[in-house]
Amino acid sequence: MRWVRFRTPDGEIHRGWVHEGRVGRVHGSPFDEFEREDLRWPLDEVKLLPPVTPSKIVCVGRNYAAHAAEHGAEVPSTPLLFLKPPSAIIGPGDTILLPPQSKRVEHEAELAVVIGRRGRWIPIDQAWDYVWGYTVANDVTARDLQRRDGQWTRAKGFDTFLPLGPWVDTEFDPSDALIMARVNDEVRQTGSTREMVFGIPQLITFISSIMTLEPGDVILTGTPAGVGPLRDGDVVEIEIEGLGVLRNPVRAEARPAA
Ligand code: MG
Image (cartoon, rainbow, N blue to C red; front, side, top):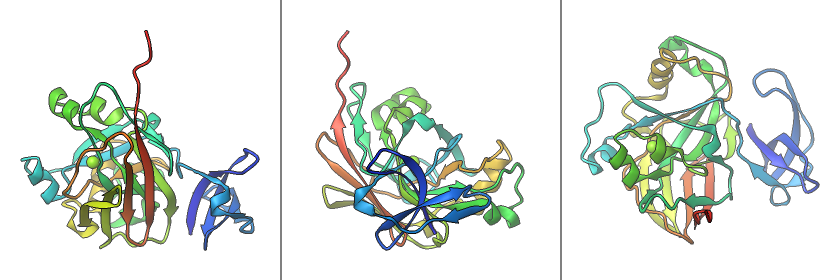
């Protein structure tokens, strides 16, 4: 099943499900009991919102060897974690803003895992039971600030730096899916999710040994090689085969007048 959050033409916000280009409401909790309504709206008549509202977004750096190599970095011996704030999230079609503080903002195509059960110290042989589903993410990064700061909160944390969507697919198979980034229809990144250094069960076990994972929390699993710049007027698409396409326009953000 493909879960969305959406706004109807008369401005109401609902959880819903998507099937064959149409959307219907869902009542109840996706993590517990729920009931589906009929597929009342064509997809292009509603506004899709970010499909989840996580308490935290845990990200993994250098989890594809070819991407670590393009920055001259070693693959770490344990997962290299950082956080993005929930305020960075935008939905499909929303605009990525290039902040005036950076001269080099880049796309990072990533598979996002969405957690479905609360857990701490999750054993590796139970890790899959804690996955609710998967969505597409763009871990937008101010590369110049990332290099300058030595840690990544500012570089990864600007508003609009986490496009997510278009939906959470609870049946997607993440074992060997093609992952791509296109800018203005030109392919920039390609890889397969099978190339991850640390797999999804290892990441869930490792992260939950540090912090409690909550239903709706998001894990970004790292990006393959080919990251590159985003410029004012670009349109960036992240596609994961069998899961979906996440498309966002890019604009320069003006510094507010003093
Ligand atoms: Mg990343």
